[in-house]
Length: 395
Image 1 (spheres, rainbow, N blue to C red):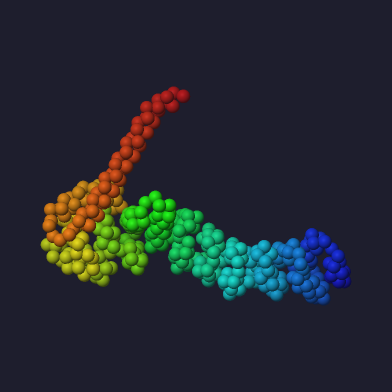
Image 2 (cartoon, rainbow, N blue to C red; image 1 turned 60 degrees about the horizontal axis):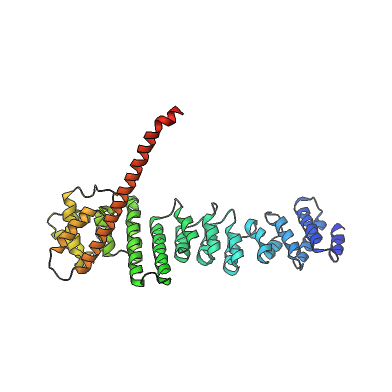
C-alpha cells in the first residue's frame, strides 16, 4: 500500500523530494522488515526509478544501495552503466560487481568510470591489469596510489611504458618500496628522454646533443641504481637493459670505470652467454688473452677494447676503487690513467673513444669538486655548531 502511494506521488513531486524519497525507499528495502509483497513492490518501484529523468534520483538510489550485498543485482548493474557521477558509488563499493564486470566497464567506460573503479577498496589483479593496459593516466595514478590494489609487476611495467613520462606517476612509482630494479631504471630512462624532448622542443640545444646528454645521464643513473642493488637482482637489470637496447659499450665501460665490477661482469656474462664464475676468471686473468676472447664473444666493438684493457690493468693495481663515491661514480684518477694509455696508442681511429673518455674525465672531475665543496660546507657547519655550543649551554 505504501509503495502504491509512493508511485502515485512520484508523478508530481519535485526532483529533490523524489531523491529523498527514493533514498528512503532503498534503505527500507535493505533494512526494514517488509513483507514479500512489499519487497517485490519496492524492487519494482526502484526498477522504474532507473528511468527517472533526474540524475539526483538515480544517484540517491546508487548511494543507498552501493555498498550492500542485498541490493537487487539488476539495479546495481543498471546503475553501474549510468552516467559517471551516478555510477560512482556503485563502482567504488558494490560487492555484487564481478571482476569480469569491472574489466568490461574499464574497457568501455570513460575516464571517470575507470577512476571510480580504481578507487575500490578491494581491487583484484585482473582489474588492476585492465586499468594499467587501457585506463587513462588519472585512473592509473589512482591505481598506483591505492594501498588496496593488487598490482602485478607486469602491470607496473605497462604503466611505466604508457605514462612514465608524467611526473606525478613517476614520483609515486619511484617512492614504492616494492618497485623492481628494471622498472626503476625504465623510469629513469623515461625521465631522461622527457627532458631531452623538452629542451629540444624549445630549441635550447640541438637535438643530437640533447639526446647524447640524456643518454649519458641515463647511463650514469643506471650505474648508481646498480650500485645499490643486491647482486641477485643485477642480472634482471642487465636483461632489461639488453632488451631495450641500452646495454651499450659506453654503459659497460662506465660501470668498469666506476669500479662496479658486479655490473661489468654480469653484463659480459649475459652478452657472452657464459657462466658468471667463468667470466670472473677471465676478467682477472693477468695475461689478458682470455679477456680479449671474452670481449669478442660478448659482441662489444673492437674500437673500445683498448679502454677496457687499460682499465683492467689499472684496476689490478688497486687503490682506485677506494676513491669517493663507491661503485656508483666514475673514478677520476682511473680514467686519467686509461686516457693516457689510450692516447699513446696509434691503432686505428680511436678519436671517438678518446672523446668519450674525456667526457668521463670531465664528469668525474666535476663530481669530485662537488663532493669536496659539500664536505667543506659540512665541516664549517659542524665547526660553527661547536663554537656556539658554550653559548647554548650557558643559555
